[in-house]
Each structure stands twice: as C-alpha cells, then as structure tokens.
Image 1 (cartoon, one colour):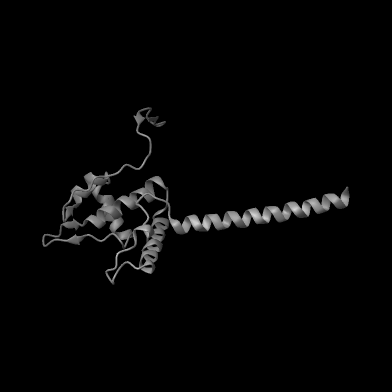
Image 2 (cartoon, rainbow, N blue to C red):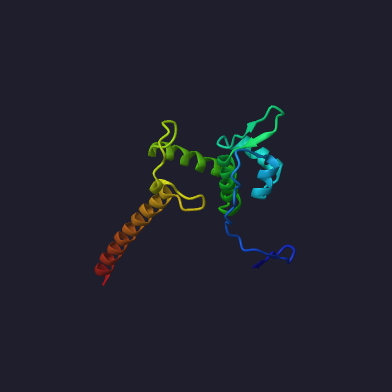
Length: 158
C-alpha cells in the first residue's frame, strides 16, 4: 500500500492487474467501462485517437466491443496510465507493433503468430529491448575508446 500525497488516503501499489474478460462475443460500452475501470466518454475518445480500436455498432447505434477490442483498451490503458506514454506515442507504439506482427506471419493470411514471437500484454517489447542493448554496447565501446585515449594522453604527460 502507498499513500496518495494529495488526499492522504491509502491506495494500492501501481501494478498491472490481470483482468478476467468474460467469454462473451460482444460487450457494450458500459461492460467495457466496468471491466477496465475507464469512463465511457474516455473510451469514445480513444476510438477517435486509436484506429486499432474500432467497436462495431448495432442497429440501435450501440457500440459492440469484441474481445480483441477489450484487450486493446487494456493495452492502451497500460501504455497511457502506467508507462506514461502520450496519446501520440501510444498510437505510434501500437502501429509499430501491428506492422511487426504482420511481418512475422500473422494477419490476413490467417496464419497464427508463433507463440515465441508474441509479446504479452504487459511484457517488454522485443524490438525495443534489442535497440536498447545495441545502444548500450555502442556506448560501452565509445567509453573504452575514450579511456584508451585518456591513458595515451596521461602517458605523454607523465
């Protein structure tokens, strides 16, 4: 438990909690709102900002979310509220992942994405991890070169 500095009330630690999504074909916006703890007006706004979030509309113009839409809402919530992405950053991240999955072999052809290639909803992005590791290796090599040059200068002075 942590204490909220604004109101002094105890709150749960900020950890992603697994949400049990019922086995239903469609969810109304109120159902999704309760499942994800996101207000309905925020869900409607996210539909305009994230092209990957596209619930169908019924004959009475009610939004009907599929399971993949609910999972997308949970992922967007994680990116915005826990990872602190901007809306633009989250949109770019999700579009990049969608392109990555198509390149792996999933998508229109109906081929499943290999289990080893799937990243979990809250897991690290493999492409980002590889980029960070490459940057770290480059930095270490640069530091080693600077250290050698400083040693050579010290030898000249000494």
